[in-house]
Length: 215
Ligand code: HEM
Image (cartoon, rainbow, N blue to C red; front, side, top):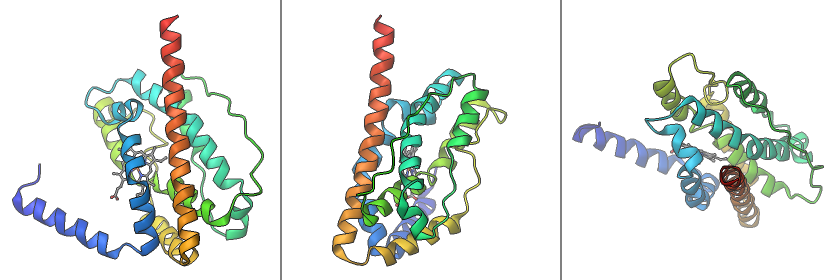
């Protein structure tokens, strides 16, 4: 727990970070904060960071994340905007699948729809923000998983080494790409849509599980 000096320092660091955030980053972050909070509080996410996490619950949460992650990653990586942007994005789905296999879970099939050719460039950047931003909480989640389940539990997905410069480079690119108001609005809408898809997939997973339990 932080003492008074510690919490004053933490507040100062937080305020400094806020001041350093560019306009596009602030808009994306503010525009998606309620959606991030809702995801964070979803049962399947909450149990990951809870003290009572079991191996079965960990496997359940990872299985639930498989489809929304696969869909978002595919939508971002397979888009023509990815190739055109020259931005190198590294996939994480194989890491998630390797963890599932080691946890004894089947890897669910995911049908990949053809890339949407009408997808706007700014909305695509909004989705990139969500996909790459989601790496930012991973270290916290990995720490919780290891503290509940020990150091040997498979944790390739959350435990990957994060290069802070990579997110910094993305944020700098977002500032350049989303300078115009209209583009920024489209990016925020794209990011919100990505969060909404993710939430809907987690809800659908939960409903399927409940339906199986009630049989
Ligand atoms: C247990 C679930 C989750 C936890 C505990 C969590 C936690 C965090 C934390 C601690 C940060 C860093 C915040 C900061 O630097 O101020 C973060 C950032 C972020 N997370 Fe999550 N997260 C979770 C799930 C997700 C999911 C599923 C997504 C999206 C699919 C997501 C998207 C983001 C984004 C976009 C950011 C970047 C925010 C920014 O700096 O602008 N998170 N998360």
